[in-house]
Figure 1: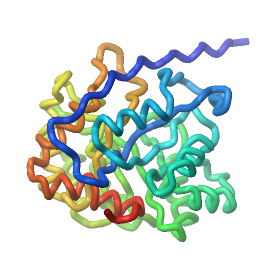
Figure 2: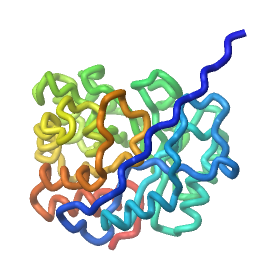
Figure 3: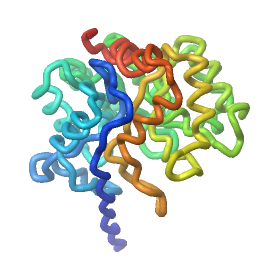
Amino acid sequence: MTTRPTPSRCPQPLAPHPARFAPPAGAVDAHCHIYGDEQRYPYAPDTWYLPPQVSVQDYLDVLATLGVQRAVFVHAAVYSDHSLILDTMAAHPGRFRGVAQLRESVTDAELAQLHAGGVRGFRANLVSGNGMKLEGAQRLARRVAQYGWHVQFLIDCEALPQMDALFADFPLNVVIDHMGRPDTALGVEAPGFQALLRLLRGGRAWCKLSAPYRTARVQPGYADIDPFARALVAAAPDRLVWGSDWPHVNMEQGKPMPSDGALLDKLADWAPDEATRRKILVVNPERLYGFDPV
């Protein structure tokens, strides 16, 4: 009988420092993961990684340091249910929203509970090959359309060079994680990235300016990601949100741990205009996630 190897513990995130600009009131971190006490919120038996030893309070401290007031919790794969994000949203009414990770077997009653608790979308990871596939996401999208949710996709954009046509008649708006994880060696004219720009211009999709360190070859600094982020800002400033991706789990071997203040600084590089940054940090996430306007 083969023994499943013990999953490895992810390294600790860096202590946060403020960005070089003051975020506007009501700013939102639209992509983060939270972790709680393992006794109260046990990990799934088949989890393939162990998170760093961080708490919800650690993340609240990050927000306070960055000057960001609100956030969107993307369900962490180490958990088999959504208790942690639901409990945290309930403890801070109106401050947080959630993105679920679901199976097609989810019941209508569970979907209603998630929506009432603050969940506003579900995620499909098309990179790892684990979990829900595109066809399943399409079927589930029809079931949650009544709630006005979106479907968040983790993709490599060059693997979907016709994504604008693929998602043109999708049952819900789609959100593309991490700038589509572009291949920086191919440049902004690469067909998959150009399809992402067309998709955003079509008004049925959103994209997260998040996790540049995941695909950048220049570490740290991520200068090779800059042309892609600036192209997104130029093409569709009304369809973008920003996310930290804290606490940066599953870092590739040899990649330095990112600084959350430096990640927020990148937004000032990509969108030097203050009004555009306010759209990305405040106005757009209010529309996408249903936060109260500030």
